[in-house]
Every structure is written in C-alpha cells, then in structure tokens.
Image (cartoon, rainbow, N blue to C red; front, side, top):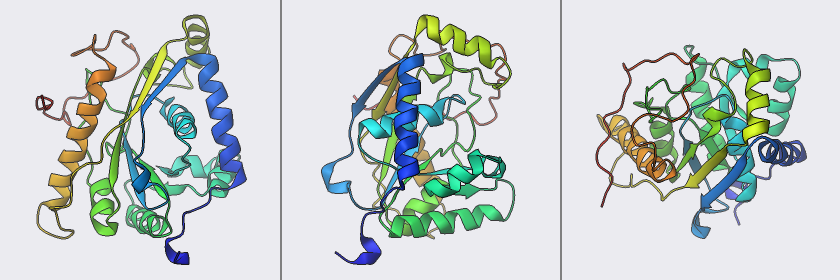
Length: 259
C-alpha cells in the first residue's frame, strides 16, 4: 500500500481517551450504538458528520467510535487547544484545531484534507455549533464539511445522536453538578446511529452552488438518520433545558424522510 494512503494510526493517548470516554458514558447513561461503517470504507479517508445537541456530545461520540473500532481525528474549536491540559492532550491525539471566525478556518480545512489524504477518519459537526433549533433537529449547516468532502473525495457518513442533552446542560460547566447528579440517578438512554453514506458523487468541487447543495444533503441525511432515534419525540424534545437559548434563524427545512 502506498504510504501516502496508508491508514492513519491513532496515538496511544487517543485510544486511552476513547476507553475513558466509554467508561464515563456507561456511568452516566445507557449507550446504544447502531449502524456501522461499511467495510469497504474502513482504512481510507472518511468523514463522520455528526449532529450537535449538547456539551456531552464529544464524549458520547468518542465512546461510540470506540464501540465501532474507529479513532477519528476531531475538528474542534480552538478554545479547547488553548486550555492548559486539554490542549496538550488534543494536540497529542492528533485532533484538528478550528479557529472559527478567523482566517485560521481555511488552514483547518487544509489540515483536515491532509489528514484525509493520510487515510484518517475526520469527525466534524457540520452545523458548526451546538444547535439551537427548538426541536433539537439539525440546523442549516456550514459549508466546510461539504467543501472538505468534495475537495478530497472522502465519503461522508452521517452520525446521529440523541439523549446527550439529558446528561449535561447547554450552559455547562454552569449547572454541571446538578446535571451529573440527575444523570447518575436516571441514567438516560443515549443513542448513536451510523447511517448510510451521503450521495455526493454527482457534485464537483468548485462548481457554483455545489458546496451548498452538498451541505443540504448532509443535513438532510443527518435528519433522516436522527428521526428513528427519537420516535416518540417527533417535534419537541421531552427533556427541555431551561438554560438553552432558542434560535430559529438557522432552522433547516425538514423534508419528509424517504418511505
């Protein structure tokens, strides 16, 4: 195999963090992981596009990826990399820094493309923030995930999650002790599903509007993947966090799921 396309090997510190995340999630919730990554896509460039509903999401997804035996490089906000201890661990684990609102965003996409070329899986939140849709459905996405996928040709797998918003409050660390205490008592079910690859082969990088169309397809796929995880909560979530603001300016029009 060409060394330039050999699978990226995750550092020991990242594999240890995945084990720790799995233990933490199992302590605070009941984790259910369904779906998988097709065998033909393993060992090569891959983009995992996940919805974002809670500060607990990174821990949940880290645990779910361990269950599916994949160690993705996470595109994460630059603030984490500036933290004294977490930042050192993030860099050592090979994660990719994203300085939102600065010219560094372009550098992050270049770093992610290089990581994909080296055979890594990249985990991204295409919404670009914890969603503020009142129903906790995926918001209208940023185009970075789509631009990365179209530029490097990596397949995109939607990874939907539900239940992490019942573990940690939106404003964590504010309210963190109470949230953990409630989770320990109730142990809510947290579901993660790895969906089918998003069809993007007909779109060409650089064509006018291609990134926007690809982004909408990714968000549609995330929405379709999420819907079966919350069958009894089709509109509004059962658990409402009073500290979470609501913003409908980026609501994504949900089309009916394919029958």
